[in-house]
Amino acid sequence: MSHTSESILAVGSIAFDSIQTPAGKAEKVLGGSVNYFSIAASFYAPIQVLGVVGEDFPSSHLKWLSERNVDTSGVQVVPGKTFHWAGSYDTNLNEAKTLSTALNVFEHFDPKLSPKHQDASYVFLANIDPVLQTSVLDQVKHPKLVACDSMNYWISSKLDALKKTLKRVDILSINEGEAFLLSGEKNLTKASKIIREMGPSVVIIKRGEYGAMLFTQTGVFLAPAFPVELVKDPTGAGDSFAGAFMGSLAAAGASRDMAKQDPAKWESILRKAVLAGCVMASFTVEDFSFQRLARLEASELAARQKLLLAMIQV
Amino acid sequence: MSHTSESILAVGSIAFDSIQTPAGKAEKVLGGSVNYFSIAASFYAPIQVLGVVGEDFPSSHLKWLSERNVDTSGVQVVPGKTFHWAGSYDTNLNEAKTLSTALNVFEHFDPKLSPKHQDASYVFLANIDPVLQTSVLDQVKHPKLVACDSMNYWISSKLDALKKTLKRVDILSINEGEAFLLSGEKNLTKASKIIREMGPSVVIIKRGEYGAMLFTQTGVFLAPAFPVELVKDPTGAGDSFAGAFMGSLAAAGASRDMAKQDPAKWESILRKAVLAGCVMASFTVEDFSFQRLARLEASELAARQKLLLAMIQV
Image (tube, rainbow over all chains, first blue to last red):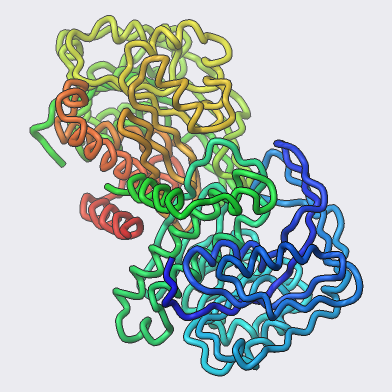
């Protein structure tokens, strides 16, 4: 954990999740992309969260977040109910099936940035309407590095808006199926090439239990997932991956200028950050909701990072 | 390529294959586990093949093999037709669907070893009846290292015989689904632990386009597949993986004694051999049958090995 790192501004959903997996079920537990992102990133750097919750949301959770390096002043609490997602996973744990989505207060979410938010160095735009992603970017004054996520829904329904966002983004992290849909290519090497031409100089393709692929100006990095004994709940794996990844970049002082001035250092920092993401995701899936991350110790994190490094060393 | 390496004795099928994949089809082309194994291994070490073909088999192919470091004196040519397998792959290229199997002369295959065969240092038992695998082992005098493959069919129908083989084997290479079936465990970490208790101190789990996992006394090595632009035909990927793997071990002078005397060296040699396997398999799938391997140059092989190493370097 680095307390001298500059802060990461993250925008996305905060939600109640109801989840069924082969390992069990969880009713109305805390979830949401930016929730997972923040908890994961807070192991590395200070976070500022932008989000919205209803009056039914437990203030104790916001308090808990703020006690761990997360500035929750950007979380709006408004009349109404919090976003509620219900989903299930069958034995293919890499893909969630959405059972229901109640956007509730999230439907009218319109992120407004305070002066402090506007000064953020690092920006992560979680999977939300690309119009909102662009609106957040419009309000940040001098970001050093911007990353974003997206999903099939936006690729299909708001492709033009998404493409506008992508033009201003340094790093895109998406999953395999989304990369195919966005690029129109069924091969990841070709798909990443096409996506990189849309704007992001760095593309990360998340492949669930098979790890992640990093595509940059330098080449390809193949990162394996850390093999866990039992995957209880894959929810949040991708967002906590992104959190540790961005946190690791912020802690290392990465920036888009570094990419130009010192490509070797940039590549090395990116690769380490991807592995940090893989390790964080491996903890996330070991329990429902963010329960495993809540009890994760920095020493466990460091030990598993060392172990994953040993597992790829030739 | 090392011409001073001790030779590898390999037993398995030599076949005609008829294959359909999303990229096209091939009628009655040359295939068979030990055919792919030998071609791949011949880049690294001398091979002696044990197999059987019918009178319809082109002698030109045996001649071609013998011109590239493969001793085919152990290939019996008997009256009747050569083994013919027909299979197809849908978009999930990791799994073949068998359309028909005509064992033909392979049905009565009974490998008899010449004195030269009996002196082999390295033995690879491709996916054949475990009773035959054991019979071959009975005839080899002082093997330094024995590896084998198997498949669902033998795990289901001849488990006791397979377990007898496994007790005498140093290395087992199987795919993910086979590891689940053999161990009764749906988790690869647990599955490999159970399989290692059956005999092989080294277990390699092949995961198609997702690479391979190596489980040893030292720990786990996660090897990615080399990302190829277009997979035309996955047939032979596993067998050519095994060929390059065993060839690489033979070229490095590996042995089961080394595992005890110098575990660090053993582990390092194994990891490099797994990567050699991944690289060879990536060439195999780029064209139908063994067409890509037939035109593969040692310089291309070396270049891709270097590239794959760069793709996993942190």
